[in-house]
Image (cartoon, rainbow, N blue to C red; front, side, top):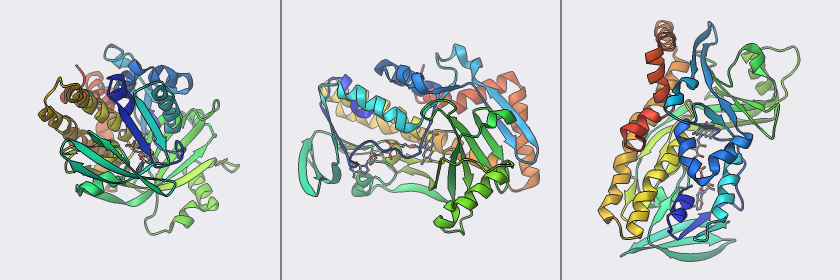
Length: 385
Ligand SMILES: Cc1cc2nc3c(=O)[nH]c(=O)nc-3n(C[C@H](O)[C@H](O)[C@H](O)COP(=O)(O)OP(=O)(O)OC[C@H]3O[C@@H](n4cnc5c(N)ncnc54)[C@H](O)[C@@H]3O)c2cc1C
């Protein structure tokens, strides 16, 4: 997205991707209204709608007490042309982006090119990469490290990744079993002190789609015990018991962090996306926030590239985006996780009652949905009117 936005502004850009092709792992899948708006001018949003599921309503439930709150994003129709979350697997978005990017004459994409180092020298960055075991170099004016949570570029910059890692891993399971028949909306959060869950329906290759469930895992168990098919089946049966076994299409576990890089820029090198911030997926803000980052960085970088802006204005990128990573993306996702997993029965009861009260009050619900859709954060940092 960063490369595409730069290329559209007439900036020459080279993408180095370590993997031999686009990756297909199960990752983000929720696109909030402003993210859809921001990608629309590139023709991406329209193509996402060909497959994506429009999710207007989402619920908070309590595993032990049933329905707590339901929110309807349709009421935001005066705020956004996309008053819903769009569910689409990240691995179905990236081919669309790559396809659009390939049409840009000023962009080059190189798969199988792993960045191994760089050196900042005067007005350029000398970037070292490795392709099929052969080292290579390229000279650039600027380098954007959008190389994920384990970012080599962030490590080479020696930028601290402040925050913490949650002790438990998350188990993600996908099944075609239709949870809508039990009244679940296509996005549902289920609170429980031991076995909370986040449920998302994904379009998959087409109907009936796949339901994706994320659960916390016992930190004391090794990975193979967590991924054992019988253990996964037990987990699913424990969630909602069925007379027949669940058909499980995918299962994986992953570690979750709440971290923000201490700085987003060191001279001619920037960090964006997961390289700059990591959060838990409750609220679907990681990839959305990363896309917002680059659409903050690109106009500044393109302005400097074309000589229309002073280099000092590049500092505005960190000023605009880092506080939102700390006070919105991190704070909201952490709060969402705590709401799901609260162990103290009195606090849990109070929290869930508060959510029910918010959902029942049209004004409070409206404000809550603006915040959950990232509109509040984007307005606060000046990226949305
Ligand atoms: C299970 C799961 C569910 C999630 N759900 C959501 C959700 O619902 N909503 C949401 O918004 N977010 C979600 N996220 C987070 C989301 O997937 C990430 O925020 C997103 O992938 C970050 O994009 P990125 O481009 O910054 O990093 P990545 O997607 O990690 O991409 C980084 C790329 O850089 C490449 N790379 C790494 N090192 C190098 C190198 N040295 N040289 C060249 N290339 C390199 C990698 O191969 C990779 O392709 C989820 C994440 C997980 C794991």
